[in-house]
Length: 240
Length: 240
Image (cartoon, rainbow over all chains, first blue to last red; front, side, top):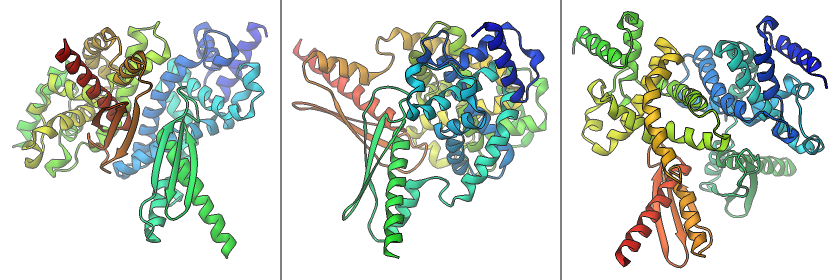
């Protein structure tokens, strides 16, 4: 692809994100291109440094969003809401919403692996957040992400467990007199950013168990709890 | 204490942090006072919301510091350096460096408990970072924290294990042909922010073991590894 075509593409993306293209000079085009060039492409510079920055930008922007949108919310709830609004799952959804695959450059191996697609969407969305911050500052990131967060936050707050399956499972098991679920977790991959880096299993006497995976222990345990909750729902439907 | 005296105190703090006191109006005094009023004081509003904000501000400011100070550093190293520059231990040191106890309001129970002091220093330093950001923005936080980070980063980078005792232990045990250290970790307190929320133990065949505690699993495991490394050092000194 010719450089001029790539710049034209990136200008379109910039406009789609709601920004003024007059701001874009050579350095800004390069920054956007870097964010959207995945390591798997073998090209340099690639997205990793902007992803690292984007992670921190996202966290601060989400904190500010919550403070503005829910000024009365207690800190414990802010913390669990923020965890959802900065999660890899949320980032992958953002990537889908902005059709990030239109603009990215990824390697042939990665593009042939559909299970890798969500991870790459999340990684490059985070890198793009880093790039938008570099180019236009925190306010612009905030303006871009706020409508996406509004939708997600409403969905999270409508769920009585706030997406927290561990709490839901604990409440159910105690209600049934089964005691507390027991979790064990191990690191099955050393690769940072691997969405299956940790494997967790959850057991409940006498014979219930499920497994989950995640990029963090917390996520793996949540996934295990969610899997067990799904089993319980399925078996109660069978009985009904 | 009279309100005018408290304002006078907070003005001094603001100047000591290197800022222009002309910026301080009623809202800014209230924000500083909120950051330095610990929940244990029973007063309202207390530090928690600003601590929540400060956590995200700190992470972004540290990411920017690293990008500026170490532009060539690979992302993996940036990530482990950042973890040190935003740790509770680092925050407690910052609190000590700025003598935060001069300005805080904490409860009588908390002030009688010396082991709680480091935790409170860390919490209120983080809240103060949130307050400085609210009042004067990210640049001001950056200017304040950069000299502290320079000192800490130099110390971290001078340590071959970058403060990572788990890596040090693993390297040692593999060198001795003992295989990999095994960790187990459990959540012993449900209280978020409790510096001993997690307990980890590490074992190495045939008979080595140590325990550690921390506010996160990662920290508890690091402390356990550090404790085992200290044992090994002590016993090799005994033998010498």
